[in-house]
Length: 156
Image 1: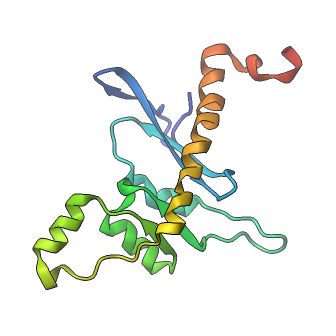
Image 2: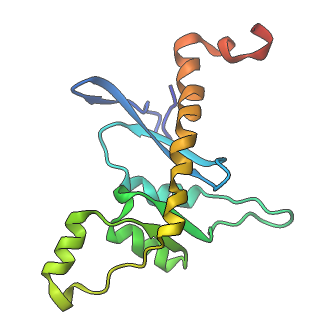
Image 3: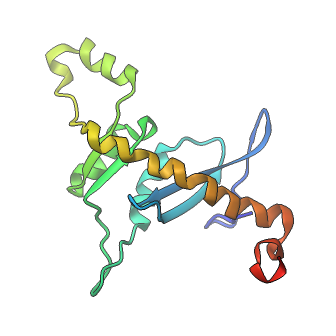
């Protein structure tokens, strides 16, 4: 089990028992950049800014970059606060809007504003995080159930 910065464990209760959420930032080559775990009940969006704050992209020389060229995210990260955060840091965002947000903007008419830019070809590459999650889950869960020595190549 991973411990949180405040000393608590990342376990939350649900009807099915104890749950944990894994929040992950990855690059287009399926390499994890930032990993955080939280109890399973809270949403995904509140973890967006802490994840972006912990992001460090190494360079060949000098200090690491803290600002990626583009962020791809699913509908869970389509809040106004997340988009404002990215806009202030001058980071391009490719985040799909949920239907309720699109409908709300349409109901407001011209006062609803212009829809956020959305690059469909870039959004197709968003699945790299989903492809990475099973490997991260295995690395996090197996030591908890089977002991640390289970993954040690010297024991197999």
